[in-house]
Length: 120
Image (tube, rainbow, N blue to C red; front, side):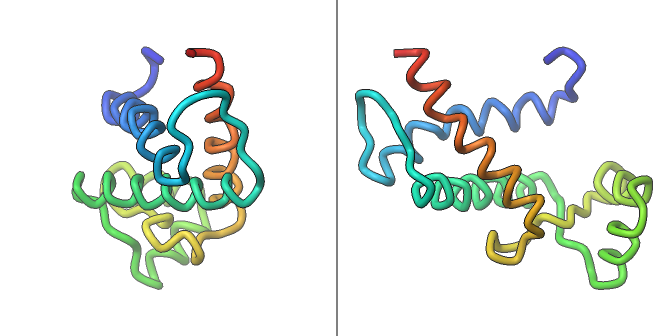
């Protein structure tokens, strides 16, 4: 935790603080939480939308087509664009994400029951 940047610490906190509203949005208000695949995908999309808004409010933008080629062509360039130019290739609708980014969002969302059920 201490090795994360302050912005990433806050991002993680915002994501955690949004768990309850996300669950309420699909009708889960209390009790034991178990998510099926459709709910995980839906909540992953909701989380991605939350993350998009967070990044846009921090001044990030989506890349141009030319920038996207550079970002995906080199991890080093991707890091430069994200950290110095405030350009992130995942700022886009969930349906337009690369499968690896969707899988990341689904993985984070699939962990919600572990967090909620261990804190009740």
